[in-house]
View: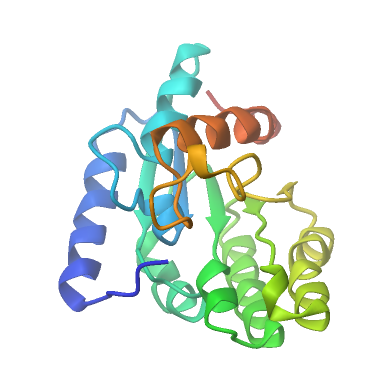
Length: 213
């Protein structure tokens, strides 16, 4: 996705996450969307991004939640691993972990992406923070061997750590130009609504399993 990443962006992210989560009452169920530009809301307006729309959808169902946006455009699994500890505050009830698309687009070895995601899941497990793993799929033009290895990462890790898996974060959006921005990679507002609608039941189940909201 977009590849610009700087110290200023990292500071902005930290302030945004703290601002989105800290003011919530103690009994509010806190979710952190941790990912790349798909999570960050690349080129979308206020309240049009995934975390904003997910929070609105959950509240519409009567759930007391706060969904923080810890997405960084251009982030890879390596970048995510480096910033995980400070991007996910203590007291978080659920992390939606969505990374790997940029690794795939850059042709990073699936072994590296898997190792980084594994390390992130291990860190969150050590902190007793539940995770919903949002999967990604490789583009066919990368070849059958790469595609097979990359696509296997998410179900493998979900089984290893016994976390719920949403198999494809862009389900209903990828390959549908009407749901995408002109770049053909990122969701437009309609695409975001499709993504939220698809993942919503899985998020609700994860919240219920934690006994939150």
